[in-house]
Image (cartoon, rainbow, N blue to C red; front, side, top):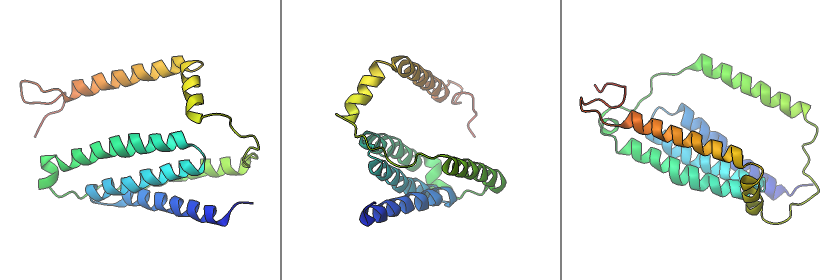
Length: 177
């Protein structure tokens, strides 16, 4: 039997996450969408805490809120064209979005109704979760860890190549207006 207070707090954070994510998607103002993404990221981190995944929750806050969201906000706010143009999004892809939503919903419902083991385990983890993650990353999963670092390095080199300044006044392969 679960504590009703924990259940109420869980549903509060789930509602915050879903409502702010919906506002991110359906808002026509990009700055409002970016600030709503802040609440979405914090809501997801809170849900990770309820799943006893403290390391992933802290990583969520540090990486997504502290890094990616702040970078996104600075990029939006320091762009000249963003401040001088109307930031309304006129494109609304309802049909592809609805098909993707229905496919995802069908997959989630199928998984929910065909899985029998939704009850928490009786065994408790011993030791620190962070210590275990570090041990597994540097022992059994060292090859996938290194492959991910090579992939991120290639993406960084590609981004630097696309963002470099050409002498002709163009950036990367795209033309400036």
